[in-house]
Image (spheres, rainbow, N blue to C red):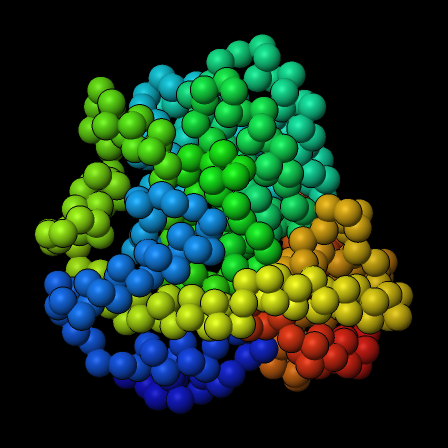
Length: 369
Ligand code: PLP
């Protein structure tokens, strides 16, 4: 083995995730590993569930971090709630909406998609029309579309979906911890996220919450959940109730990390955290404007934590990113799919969302452009 790890130095993570990790979270990760059924660990698990409920604004008892990255949350959502032949509507305006449709299709669901231009939000009226046409078992949307920087109107879509009786599934991978997520008020039945964005932990956990309606669908399944590892009914026997049964060995130290990250967020105050994201986003947009750089998304639909910036004509987009990393130790993201080569994605997620980070990036960009 080489001593490669000695070469790992801090990078200012201003891409689409992972984001900068809180120093307190690094310290939490380094605490001694204890057993996954140690009574102290069970107490830590319970506090994590409670913190997640506060963050997601839900009373759901079935709220837990899945072991795996955000995509594990996505798989778990669809695998638990869908059976072969179920009719599903996926609202698509970026990479992650497309991925949802792929995941649902692999479960033999009958998937319809409603597509919107990348860089624009889902139009609630179009969803209402589609729902008037056909009955669905489940409707799915991404709250914060990380591939474009667009915020989708999750509350407005929920108001259309709920009266139809369909389950409502929302991806909050990029939004959770950086902007309000009101699962119960928005009528969301299953919501999942990821630890490495606005929660400022390393990647590896996918917080997930399921409503009573979602659990009722799970109970009423004709067929078993096709995926043993992500089967919520099995996982809940480990994460919930007075007696806990082994399912899989929880990633103990990552749970410490999430516990600490939730503590950091709640200590700062959720409103203060959200306001910090908005303030730092406004600063970034203003400073980029001074460099002559424009945003992809119209102001009213922009996410504070993911900023899609148009690459000026004639600029070597990959070259700028490479120089930012090599010379300034700053990472920003590239465009995906149809936006590849056309935008940079600048993340202001969690602990990254600080004024001094914006100034450091803008200075570096100034030098490299
Ligand atoms: N959903 C959204 C909106 C995302 O931004 C991402 C990752 O960037 C994912 C899902 C998948 O998460 P992961 O890469 O952690 O598996």
